Image (tube, one colour):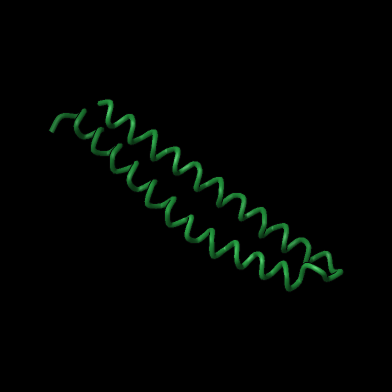
Length: 86
């Protein structure tokens, strides 16, 4: 197998893995968002700063999961396009 074929195969694999991982993270994100909403509804009205900090931390994590999903989707598309061009 030529080096070009090997690289093409590796890029295709990376694209597929990134797509699969982003799909898995999207499923996690859905469950995570529900949990964040439940925590916020339960403790959101309390006066303690720790509670607000917990909610902010969870919301920040939720945004990072969204960013990871988007980055993996972009990586998948780029790897797939590049592999197809070889």
